[in-house]
Image 1 (cartoon, one colour):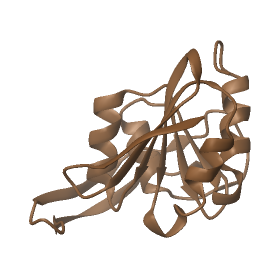
Image 2: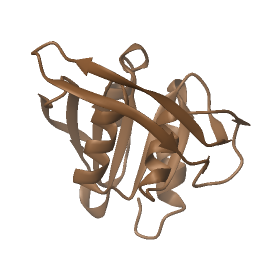
Image 3: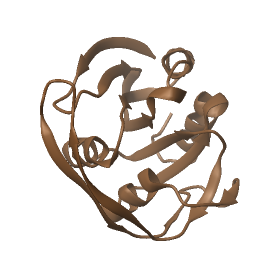
Image 4: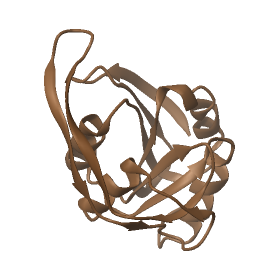
Length: 162
């Protein structure tokens, strides 16, 4: 895929767009800052139709906002390791002020989630995956070293996906 643009959102999150061949779906890859370094290179190696939006975020509000705005076919949450599912969880409410002074509150109760492709990995809590599940968006949690492979597998299992 070809990297086409980069910007910063209202919450100070780094965002980037990657475009593939015509057709296909829109996907979201969401990563915490500490795991994001290798993700753009993995997305550039991806041979697929459609587009992938990358969100490098801290906290759930930027993620939830992006999911609502894009309504992607699915979201890949980048993590230390792949997870298969996770329990419901309560994220304590907190007030956040980003670097440009924007203030917002985040937190709340989020449902259990299950990987869109079934049982790869262990069962463990993942706030981002639970947030995606709260909006009904298919989710996978993949290891940072498996971004390209995970997306290709998911796209291959999706009609008109790759």
